[in-house]
Length: 307
Image (cartoon, one colour):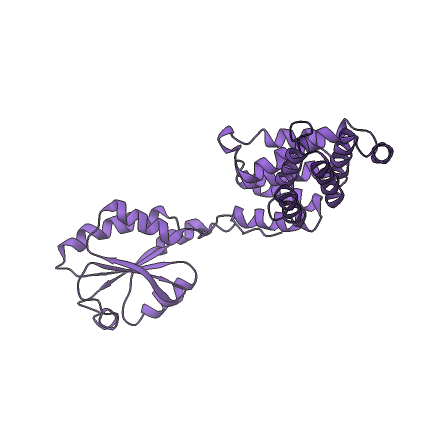
């Protein structure tokens, strides 16, 4: 299980080293090598430069606010002209951002503080600060474990993600999906209830809600064998076929569930106010757009509807 160590006071120790002066001799260590760990800004300045004195405090403030996601080094071009000369710096202030040992972005002149903040935010997007846990990576790991069929293991990892960020929508939806998969519908509903109303339209949330609705429908139905007998006895009993599809889906037989609903669409598209097609769309939403059964089912449905 991927956990980034929060111990040893890393964040507190990093603070004094966030901003420093550099020289021609220490440039490779301070900028090139350090930028392989996180973005590094180099601020080219000089004592006589008035705009530099305006820009540097804003840069330092933004770097400190980023809490270790970016570092800053300052180089006096009068004392150390070689590096700015090699980089073609012709006017100051000039700020160049290095990432993975290479110049990646930058700007010239004393820009407003809002632009400095936007620049830092753009550079640090997706960067984890020292001592922080990358919740997105934990959720990604849980998704992979769930895809392999380890529901219990995935639930534990989603719970770990939520211990760091209790409002993480992907983790809440993932944990709820684990509960649905294991048949714990009430726990799934309780977990999904923690999602703010404004996020109910999130695709992952909608998918789990659809799965919950389908599971509750299946609870009201009889055994699959009984439903299969009903359909065999009367192939035009669309309600029995509809119920059979719902029951098959609850058992995880997505292909067979799709077959039954498509059969209704073929025989009587208007049955129950287009009920078979609507149910199939709900299946697709619950399974997810990238699921093989969804992709194949959509193709077959389109063929029937537009033939």
